[in-house]
Structure formats: C-alpha cells, structure tokens
Length: 204
Ligand code: SF4
Image (tube, rainbow, N blue to C red; front, side, top):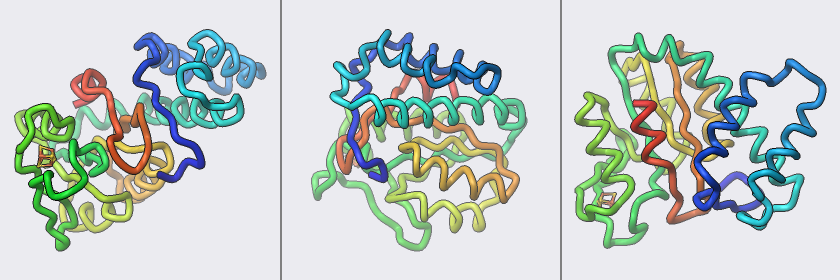
C-alpha cells in the first residue's frame, strides 16, 4: 500500500474513467492541466465519494492519467505480443487468511489460485485470462516481477496494481522491452482491494 492514503473509487461513476482516458490525450497540450484535474475532482465529487483531500485526490488522478497515457502508447505493441502474462495483486483475493486455498510457490514467486470461491475477484480474473491463453501470476508485490520476467520471455504483460507498484513494474518492463498494459486498483489497502473486471475484459 505505497500511497500515504487509502481510497475507494468503486462508487465513482464509470464515466470518470472515460474522462481520465480523455484527459490523458490532452496532457501536456495546455497549461491548465491542474485546473482540469480540479474540475474533474469536483465534477465527479471525488472528495465526497472517497474522503480524500484535494491534494491526495490530485496525486491519485495524476497517477491514473500517467498510467492511461502509457497504456495508450504501448497498446499497439501489446496487441502484437504473442506470449502474454497477467499479474494480479494477492490483496484482491477474497480471503487473505487460511480460507484462501491458493498455493504459494516461492520459487516463481506467485500464488496459484485453487478456485475455492466463485465470487473471488482473483478467481474470475484468473479463469478469464487463462481462457485467453495468458499465464497468470498472483503476486505479493512488484518485487516479484523481475524474477518472473527473467525466467519467462513474455512479450506482453497486463498488470493490476496500485499506482506505485505499476510505476515500479513499468520500469522493469520497459528495460526488458516487454509491452505493458496497466489496470489500476479502484480500491487500495492491504486487503480486500478491488479492480474493475469490465476494464480487465477490455484490456486482455
Ligand atoms: S478463489 Fe483463489 S484466490 Fe480466491 S480465495 Fe480461493 S484460492 Fe484464494
């Protein structure tokens, strides 16, 4: 949980994320970027929905926009990638205790989902990605990424994580010439984090 604040964007309208994508196109094109961010925060009542103060909300939006901009730049290369992997955060598992039947293999290092709960977000994402031919890893953190990429020569990687972890992994991917697509968490924290399945379906 690298942010100094927690957030939950799950109650923010879907249009908010479309707006983020739109603004990512405009980034750098005008000098009123900060005021555009503040307008978006106001328009979507982000402070009311999340309890964040303006400066934390700006940090969060800035990260979301940076991430969308990189996604757009990498999209063409990613679509050409033949060997792909999906990295999921372990904190999105339904359970973080022994009720989760996933097996952790420290030699990879990754959890393997045992599909114990139908309504587990990680379970759903794991099944969907495997159907599409992806290798799936459920990671305790971004520090696992270099080892996995050194062992397996993936051409494209989809990563679900919070902003800071995405930045760390993005640097590793860039250094290894792997095309990345990032999906930000819409709810952060140490457990019960969430991402949007609709977004994942579109990206895979
Ligand atoms: S479905 Fe998979 S990830 Fe979710 S709680 Fe069960 S074993 Fe863990």
